[in-house]
Image (tube, rainbow, N blue to C red; front, top):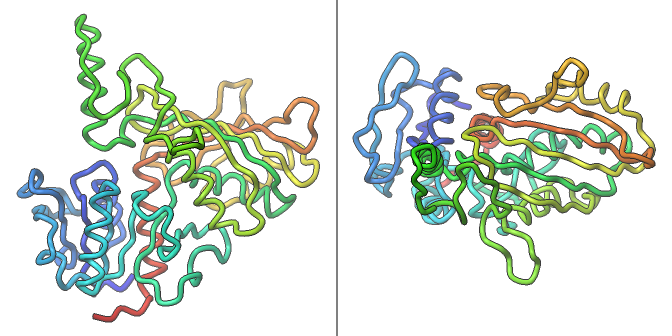
Length: 341
């Protein structure tokens, strides 16, 4: 990414936004070419950027003017508005939300699927990254799909509170402390109390399908990236009372028989994947191990009983950090896209 570009990080004080600010600083982008933007309630906050400190401003048409690249770490409803504002100001936009999951004019980009995403919409200036669960599905199963084909995927995803942003983290903290003190607080950002509970509904339900929009997004994103070879995919998302890191259980039916040993070898060579697979030694993926780790952790790789063409896997991902770093990776890929006012 050209260091002369003015980069705006929108939603800079949120869970993903803070990770994005840190990743941008680590990449060496000059602090004087970075703007940190957020809502009015966060205006005036100061965030570290390398060895400097940058003040957060209110996201608006004025503060986005002149930015060549806008990285959106905002809720979907905010992204829908600010993406248009940033584009009108002449910026290339990379969004981390689900605002454009059904918008075919906004390519979803995941660099580890060869040839996917970029180039599908000529002249596109707005791009998006897949959500953390889709990142896990693609990252873990793309090597197996390339070697053996992929017919069917089922996933169970255990989603942490930070997927609901800073407010989700605060609510879980308050509920946990309240319950330990004998008080039960009403939920505001989850369908039911999350403290000491599991909630099998992440996002609103889609009419008629029985699935939530989170679950449908996995199918939509993998379908766009894998194209005609995309497998049938379904699953269930569950809120769990942990703060950071998602855990995903995968059942994959391949196009041919594959042993766990062959799958393990393919995954060990896959980019962005770290194999932790020594169950007898209690070594396997867990959310607490992925914090600040760029890699998707995968383990518990085993055959599905009676089906030599089916495998079971367990994977974990740093939901906020992985999304932020992927956003920056995509930004570097698309920053060569033509920008016209």
